Length: 204
Image (cartoon, rainbow, N blue to C red; front, side, top):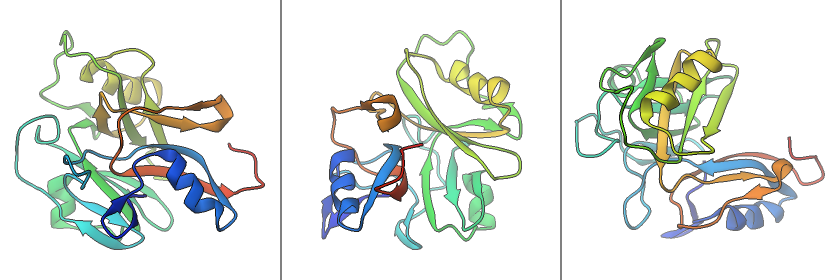
């Protein structure tokens, strides 16, 4: 996870993260916007970076997609990935090295979020993350065309066979994928999630 490049200064986009990594001979093999944020780009809900909690968990319902309970947490531990419902996380916190809270949950124990409507006309370019049952693999997905939340959840459950998946955002969804010759620009971002590799390695 990446947020601040200095005191009260956010990275804001993929290029500034890549530039900072290059000083240590590293680069982004992949990156995506990594969570919802306030107007000053502070995270909405839990945010952990390199073991430091920079924003607290929010367990209450609220406006917008984030507050459409159940929402959840994407957690990167030392040896596994987890997507977990927020209140379950509050009862038994995981040792996350990195984490971001977002919402709503897309898929919960193999079931769609109970509030989703199959025929909803709320369609956006959306991005999210799902986790394999064994926690060994996390799949980050961005839609090519506007989709509703039910359709987006169905992709994780029925096409990727992932029993847990979390919505990250819509409208501001951005992808940095050098192997696809793609790096989206546009709105400045808050949290960013990415995979870091040595600069000499191919971006896979």
